[in-house]
Amino acid sequence: MRYEHVLESVCYIRKQIVGAPKAGVILGSGLGCLAELVKNRVVIPYGDIPHFPRSGIAGHAGNLVYGEIGGCPLVMMQGRFHYYEGFEMDQVTYPLFVMKLLGVEQLIVTNASGGINPAYRPGDLILLEDYINFSGVSPLRGGNDERFGPRFPDMSEPYSREMISRAERIAGDLKIPFHRGVYLYTQGPNYETAAEIRAFSRLGADLVGMSTVPETIVAGYLGLKVLGIACVTNMATGIATKKHAHEAVMETADKAGRRLCTWVQAILDERTAI
Ligand code: HPA
Image 1 (cartoon, rainbow, N blue to C red):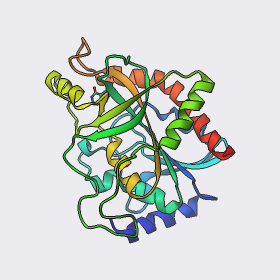
Image 2: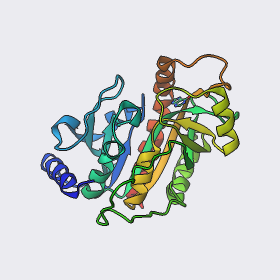
Image 3: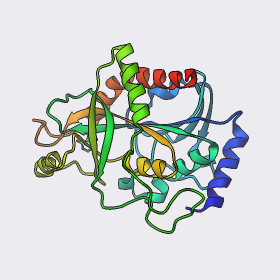
Image 4: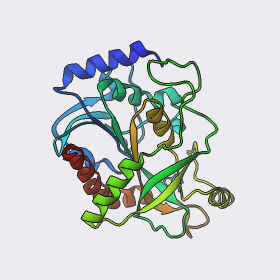
């Protein structure tokens, strides 16, 4: 990662905004409604930001949204970059480096996932407590710039216990039901086989998806506190009785997305009260 490139991106963004973000939010597929809750919104298309990757697929808007939720200044990624789209890992995780140099300290990352744990149902929200990187690649491969973080970053707490506790307390107050779980990351874009899902279950995975882990690894490396919330859009292959359809996945994400929005909004609001 070129430090100078990140600085140029940051300089451009700073010219468009007033103040500095404390939190970063990454929106998963179909979970874009959160962007509408941002007050004093400044929308910056990815294409306008020097060195920023450009996004493509349907259902993924490509904007950096700056503003406030509940008084908390934040920057939100409306649309993320996936490895399966052909982006390199340093492109997938480029926005995290930008967030860090903008001043972000805490990250909330959301996604749509397949449920492996039989206690889950489509539409359920899951607080991530750990991950399994089943992709075989790390976004930190290659030369290391110590200005960003250490060569061998610790990953014993990829999701902040403090943020998990806060999210749990708020969910209790708002009566939002949720589960906890371990997220397994595959490269995608194909869904898994039934044999893979049985294997992942034995490995300790509760849910499976094609995002989030590269961003979590880089955020941890950069010293950000991370909260991960997944929306179960379908039960995984072999557990589900039907074949997967992307449209049904998006529809479930859309419905559950409203609950997720309420939750994330309250979590961010609470931040300012601490
Ligand atoms: N597998 C992988 N990724 C997913 C799934 C799934 O079943 N559902 C939503 N994202």
